[in-house]
Image (cartoon, rainbow, N blue to C red; front, side, top):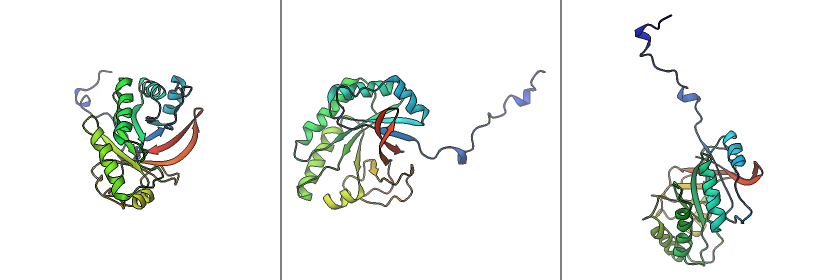
Length: 212
């Protein structure tokens, strides 16, 4: 039967907002990615089938990180990068190395996360200077964020709010893929992402699980 003209303008049914997932899922890989730690198309497809929409690659070794970025992006995942910061090394060199990985991948990477969690023997003032150096080195090139834990930030950086303008990716291993229970710290009132489970084997690779 011919469709009546007054039906043509009817809206296409959509999933009610209350039934849509409130959070999306991401995985991150260890920074200590060795030459053999390649990501395969089959792994990416398996991650996507498990609901993963984003991968955060550690900028530890150049060639493996570049391969992982490209493989994840080619498979349809959003990609970001993190750099684990060592306080006893020059910050600008560490950040520039991460930026070189991103540039050499020739992939549109969404964000560089500054990973602040390493054991330290420095004063709060010295560490603030170092973290400011890392931020200044990178923020003129791409969006930045901070990865940390609440207890670490309060203990080693005196709960400074100087970086509260940057998105927060925080660790809280409660197994819950949501922001329930988040307690404000460091000038952050709401996180951008939560690492809620670590050392999970997914499609044959050890990954951490995140919600965002």
